[in-house]
Image (cartoon, rainbow, N blue to C red; front, side, top):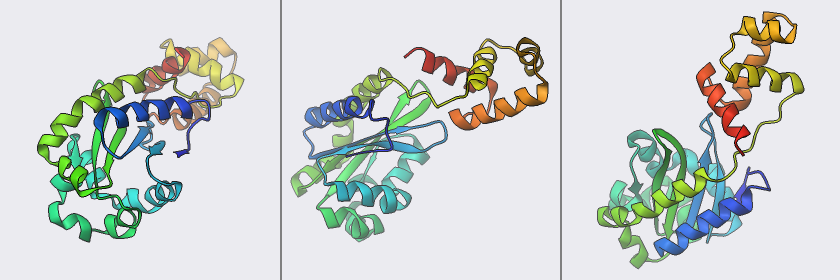
Length: 221
């Protein structure tokens, strides 16, 4: 099941996720993109749609493995993070245990230094769950690296911009100041400032450099 993803992009994202599932030999896979605002949108294969809805609405906020990955920037799993406490934690009792997920590993995906996504590899049997130790995390890490590389090749959905916002974004990406953008467009600096604020909200950025990079990235696809 895919959630919150451009319908044109969803099949390509599912194809990347399926490749990770086949390569890892696990029972289920989740592949999520992180936008610049920190929101996760993606696809889960090998689990029922009800699990996806339950995990995204109830599970993500209380997921201790995901929290560990965000904190450390390194892979983690239910076995390594929780051990025997896994079946007593809120995530297992409220979501995972209800759908027969015996454990999972979570791998952060990077674009250079920026975390751009998460790869989940899940187990439905005790035998697969035992693969989620430190050695298993090391063995599965190459699948995460390949997944990150494949994700970077997927097109990024450009936010819907007005014609004037598009003009402002293009000029800002060229390094023009608000004053120079205003002069080029025959408008006032206050109007340009308003458009820049809207652009930062649309792209989830906070600096002109990040906005320029995000805008140029959409133009490459």
